Length: 43
Image 1: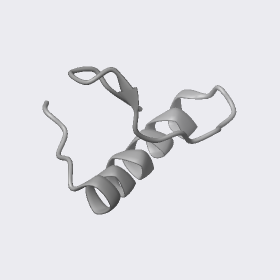
Image 2: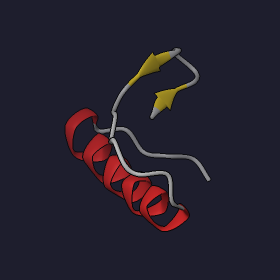
Image 3: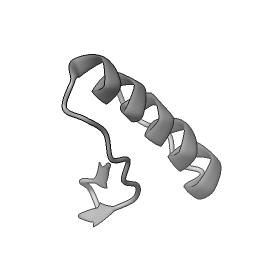
Image 4: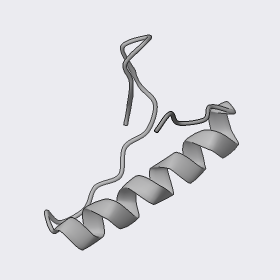
């Protein structure tokens, strides 16, 4: 997961390349980023 406004990597989650697992990994990373860095995503 990249903060594009600051051009930094804020989280990484390794998964097999299937859509369902990618979606789950994205949700996990968003939750972790919110908890760790107090950042919120923009839709």
